[in-house]
Image 1 (cartoon, rainbow, N blue to C red):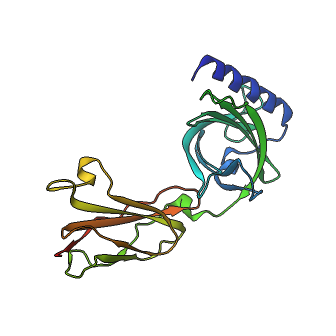
Image 2 (image 1 turned 135 degrees about the horizontal axis):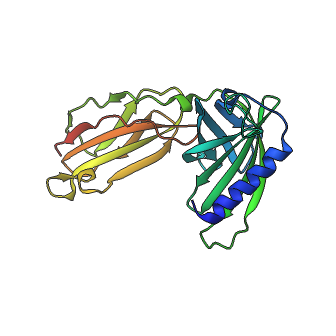
Image 3 (image 1 turned 45 degrees about the horizontal axis):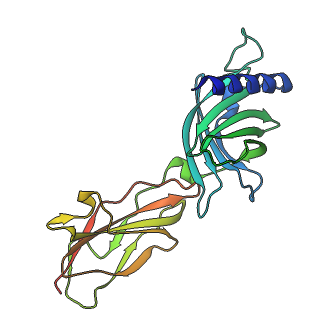
Length: 253
C-alpha cells in the first residue's frame, strides 16, 4: 500500500474510533449483509468472515445487469485501547478494496444490529472524477450465493449426440440451480478457429452467451463438424458458479 493511502487509512480510522463509543464482539460482524436501500448506486452487499482475530470481507457494488464483485480483502479491527481484548472489544473495522478505477476505503461499525459503513472512494484512473465519501446501512441477509452455487446439470442434447438434420438448429437444456439469477453458456466449435483444434484450446471463444434467465438456449450451429458446450450459474452478487463439464455433439451435414 502506498504511503498516502496508509496515512489516509490511519487518519480516517482514528476519526471513526473517536466517534463511536459502542463496543462489540468481533464475531458479531460476521455474516452476510445487504444494503437496506434496494436502489443504492453504491455498495450493495458484504460478506464478512471472522476467524479468531482475522477478518476477511467480500463486497459487491451496483452494476448492470448484475452487481460487480469487488472480491475479497483483509479487514482490520480496532479496539478502544492498546490493552483491550481485540476479539471481544471491537469498535470499528477498516478495509481497502482495489478497483479498476482506484480504491475504496471502508470504515465499518456495528450499531444496534446494523452495519454502518462509510466508504471513501479515490480515483486513480485520470478520469477527472472527484473523490467522494458515502454512507450506507446494512442489515443481515440470507444470500444463497455466498454459500456457493452448484454446477448446472446438463440435460439435452445427451453427451456425444450425433445430428443429421439441416438447418442445424440446436437447443441446449439444463437443470435450474438454487440461488442463480442467470446463466452463461459457452459453445465451442472444432475446426472453426484452427484446423483440428477447439477454439477454447487456442485461446479463443466461438460463442459466449450471458444473462440467460431460462434453463435453455437455442442457436444455429455452423458446419458439419463437432461442437461442445458447457454452462454455469451466476448469483445475485454477480459471482460465477463452477462450470459444468464439456458436453459434445456433432453434425453430419
